[in-house]
Amino acid sequence: MEETRNLCAQIPVSLHAKVMEEKAGQKLSDYITELLTKHFEGGKETMNENKTIAFQVSPELNQRLKAYLAKHNLKQAHFIIGLIENALNNDEAGAE
Image (cartoon, rainbow, N blue to C red; front, side, top):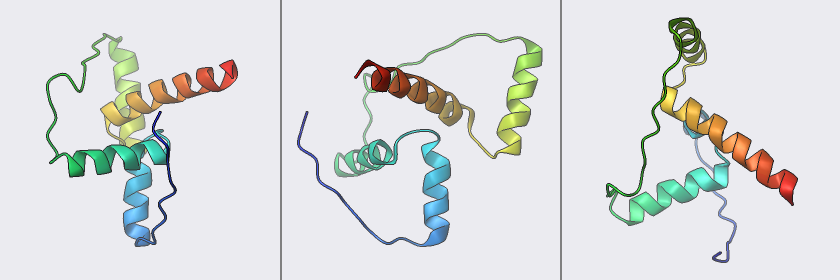
C-alpha cells in the first residue's frame, strides 16, 4: 500500500454537510481519495472500474427502503454501498 499523508483544509459548513451526506458510510479518507483520484485522472471512468450488483427484494421491503431513503435524503446506491463498506470494514477490523 502506498504511503499516506494527512490533508487538512477548512471548507464552508454547507459544503462539509454535503460531503458527509454524500460519503454515505464510507470512511472520509476513502471518499476524498476517490474524489481527488477521479479529478486528477480527468474524471474518466472505465467500464472495468465499477461492477453492477443486482438483487431482488419484496415489494414491502422496497417500499420501506424508499421511505427510509426519502426520510434521510439518501441515494439508494450510496446507502447500499455504505452498508457493504461498513460490514466489510467491521469484518476486517475484527480480523486484525
